[in-house]
Length: 266
Image (cartoon, rainbow, N blue to C red; front, side, top):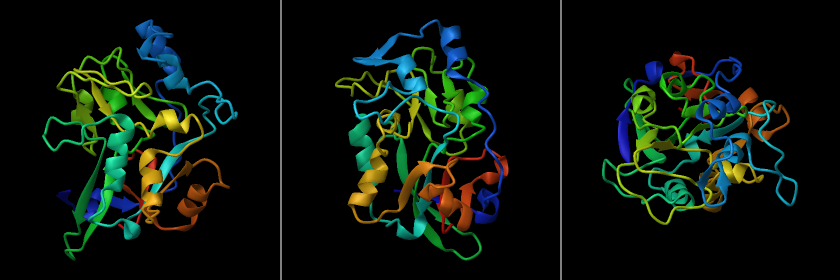
């Protein structure tokens, strides 16, 4: 676990009522530029399926990504135990990450501790891609490899990522990793590749089948239930109701990124 000292008045500010803006880069434009609309990125997984959401499952839980939906998370720091890393372990297992501690090892979610400068109060919370409505990683990408689905999930197109790492530098949450080493035994639903950049996908392969991200399920199984996942745009969803009634916050809201991950108790 890392400690990231932060003045909460500067780095974390009260949530506003800002509405997410329309995606500035749709998948179809990216696919047209790359010329790979039907290309395979891993056994059984096509790029167009990942970007637009996989075809409907047998139980009918998925019918494609919709701009009526905005997937997000609400994390209650008061329920997050400083010694627990179940969410990190679940992410590594689900996505085929090594879980190594070297600076070159990919890390899609990490546990950090933040410290209030005035009071010295510390809190533990998970940090991952915040799935911004206005993602800096998308703005700086020279090829369009970084893109945002219409339902708010930010992804990387491995076919056209050139490994420039502009997105790594642009991300204010340190949420992207560069793959330094050759990979083996990859998960069919989680395409990765040496020389490309990657980060939390909200377990898009699970979401598209009507399931929750691995970290959410692991936290619930551990009895903490510190992470709530759902549709921020649906006023009847549990997450939307809590965001509307509780004092939630965004990390670095001063940047006006309108993050899809919100926090309680920080």
